[in-house]
Amino acid sequence: MTSTADAAGAVLLRRGRRLEAATLAWNVIGIMVLAAAAITARSVALAGFGLDSLIEIGASTVVLWELSGTGEDRQRRALHLIAAAFLALAAYLTIQTVAVLAAGYHPHHSRVGIAWTAITALVMFALAYGKKRVGTALGNRVLTTESRVTVIDGLLACAVLLGLAFNAVLGWWWADPAAGLVIVYYAVREAHAVGKH
Image (cartoon, rainbow, N blue to C red; front, side, top):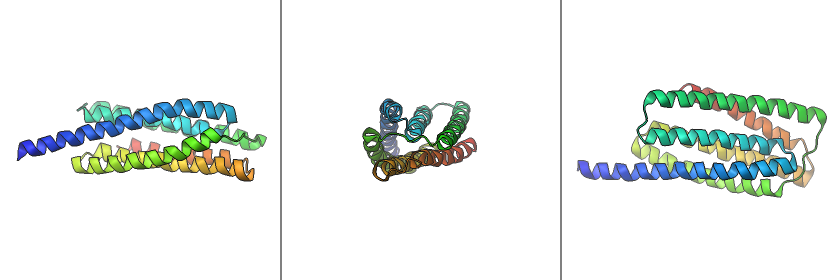
């Protein structure tokens, strides 16, 4: 009975690692795609979402360390670094968004950005669902908590997608930096939540 439970636990652990590795890989590719799209369109929202992807890479790395049996002390230090990174993201985006809104700068349309954020939203929601199921089955609080971070990543993709779409279809140039402010809100919230762990 114990060996069966151990075997099932090992399968779940491998599945959890694969889900985190997939999240990590997607975000690494995402940084390159978003950087190119943000530079081409001069989009605050895409730049912010790219920086958020960098932070998500850090979060996935922390979970992979934890799933490999890394000590609690190292995990706590890593979580504090992630919280600091979220605050740095919030500060950068606040300054950038205020500057763009004050200058009245109109970002260009970004078909690549629209396509990438739409696909990313779907991928993140699917990964979050898988992580929550595996984390709950394993009784692993870190994986379950990180699944919520992945949900937020999906929601941010939706917010950025709306900002880009409103700019492209309706000419609402301010929707792009406004989407950046949504990321600021979630970055501060995540910094607070991660810092409490």
